[in-house]
Amino acid sequence: MQGLSKPITDNSFRTRLIAGVDEAGRGPLAGPVIAAAVILDPACPIAGLADSKKLSPLRRQQLFQQIREQALAWSVARASVAEIDTFNILQASLLAMQRAVHKLSMRPEMALIDGNRCPRLSCPVQAIIRGDESEPAISAASIVAKVLRDRLMLLLDKRYPQYGFAAHKGYPTAAHIQALHCHGPSRAHRRSFAPVAECIVNGVRR
Image 1 (cartoon, rainbow, N blue to C red):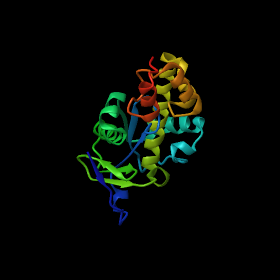
Image 2: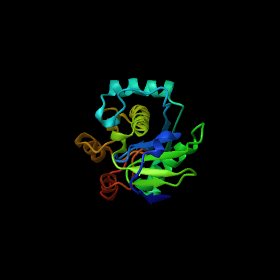
Image 3: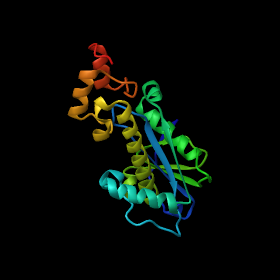
Image 4: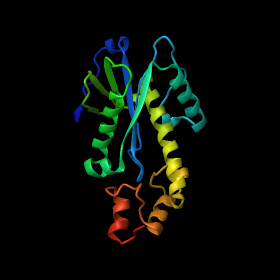
């Protein structure tokens, strides 16, 4: 499912049909991990693409809309909480990336992956550490994944309002940890993650 990356030694890939791939949600204690794949149109560049974590929510929304309208193709996929608990978060993230690329409406000639591990794909693949800061297609994928995962966490907040998902999106903030200890884990929580597992061991169940 994965492989170590090798450094890029030339820029020939920049002239091909490139899919940028990134995920959102590796660190949270709850919710799925979401991956996105984006093929940008070289004839229609999008200004301001950057690592989604460095953009304001409003700016992410604006760029997300531009990506939807101007990209040649884009797709999203997820790995569920059950898959995260079964395979571990790294393998689940790679699985979500693989699914996102396979869902693209056109086949990329190459995929650029944020990080240092690659999913198995039918096209050549290259991992780039901090690629969401340097490669526009990866930046676009990071924005799409972040926006859609945040929207999903807002839906989970309505289902489980006692955890405050709307505020922290599932990340292990002090308020989230306190809610876990008070209410125990929900079905949306990742039981393989230590703070959640500790609540189960200590008998705090929903």
